[in-house]
Image (tube, rainbow, N blue to C red; front, side):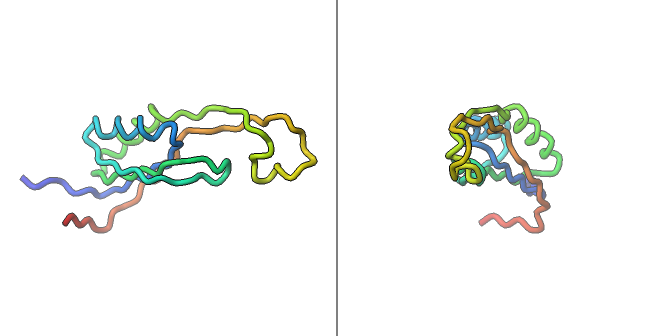
Length: 115
């Protein structure tokens, strides 16, 4: 029997805090996953980009696992660490920002080659 080829590529950007837990859940569910280290732009914190090539029917399963494992939360960060507010003239009080959560892109796979 021939193994099904992926026709969708899920690209998931998550915080380092959630990445290992998400990877574990994807693998537990028999979904392929590769983690690539990346850095976020807004807070310049470590992120991970997880890619998973799946059949179209599995995209909803991937999305549900992402929703279960990657929750947005609020943190207080020093105003000096924010790229657009750290130039003085602003209060030294920490600012509450939203962190965590995930962004998931689903792309069509035009061609899949395994060597």
